[in-house]
Length: 123
Ligand SMILES: [Zn+2]
Image (cartoon, rainbow, N blue to C red; front, side):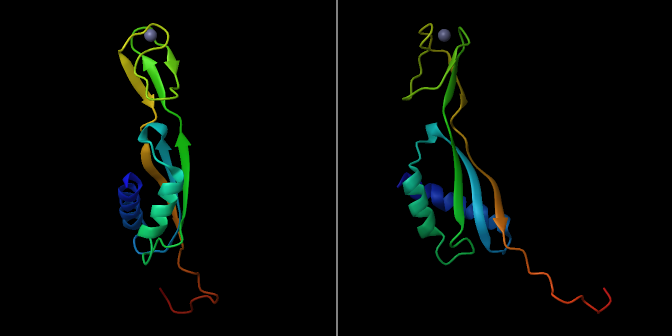
């Protein structure tokens, strides 16, 4: 259900940026710490976009690994599981460097077709 509300949020943002033009694709970055299930997100995105300008648009997601840094010894690591103690010194002053991203990078839309014949009317 997490993915359903995310899909609705993605759709709302996409349609706002599309400004009435049909959407071909949506490019996103999502961090591993968001715990998004890619198949679920695709599934719900397909449902929420039905009947909208984003119907049939491709959802293209870069899933980014989580990356943490210890505030005590500056060690950086990519946790397999959410792990908030430094594996180097055991310190708990851990800072999240990446993994919480959730945003649309850009969308592509269908532009109006250019006229086949030049416009003879003065502009
Ligand atoms: Zn440390």
